Image (cartoon, rainbow, N blue to C red; front, side):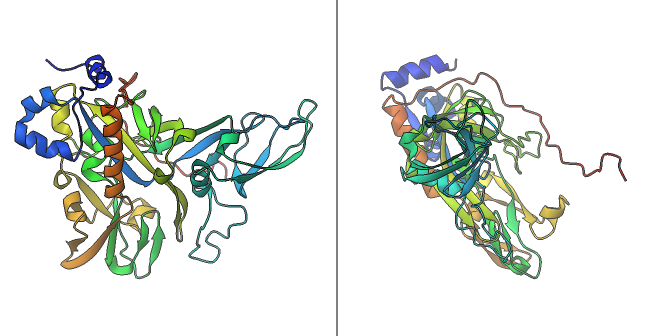
Length: 398
């Protein structure tokens, strides 16, 4: 007999739930045995911390006097999207500051953008709103310039179309020149290698078949009580998997949302990627209810059992060739050095295992104290979905 969400939540409310992180559970199961541990353990906390470019937020400013229907807006000179209602905007994490030279003088610095605005908002800093309007009978004001902080907003709702990639590429550069990517700076002739994953702590690597993580799942989103509101964009579950079910490439993703007013600044950080752009690093924690022994077994996945593929970002990635140069597991990658084609290659991570472990511990503490309850998904994530590409055509025109 397994457990139910209701039974686990009752134990959480009573302060009796047994909660371990995805790192702790590995040795615990080795010591206790799978069946015994499944009876004892109620929740395993998973987490990740790293750049999540497909992130952003909806902001509501309330109405000025007289009223304005904002049609163009800049927050600290970063453009926000205004095609919604009168004083709602959406700010994307990768949006560049107005007049940023980008890669005009390659490689660009990308010192400030949407991710940095979001970081400063969560940190409580004062920012400038500049808005323009074409003016209407009911919204006559045509221009507004004012200072505000997050407490002046009615709502500040982080809404991220694609977070928590289930696995990802390992990047190298086989060309003769340095290149600049979202996986960092890659030196020529494969002199370094980068990756981005929390490995054995990562949420969807601990639930590879989406048995407990789905639409409606409660998540710890940078300290706020968030939710999985949809499958993430580019969710592609029909991929190559190992014998343990763990994907060996990108695979699943999550659409996440949460209240920015409840977030912890330490886990919301703007990122500048030289020669590429701006982004936002986030801390995300997701609890996995131990409903049965099989679910528990999947949470004991080790770094050495999680494999990623090496892709050349100078040619194969941009040209979408599908060529794979090698495969490594995360235990090998986390040593900081691997052997490729008979040479030692330095390895670095774009994500932080240390910060991910902090998130897993914080979520564990909230569950143990009864502050964080679990929620069963209202809908499963698509289990056999492939990702379409964009066909280049001119609609039949010459």
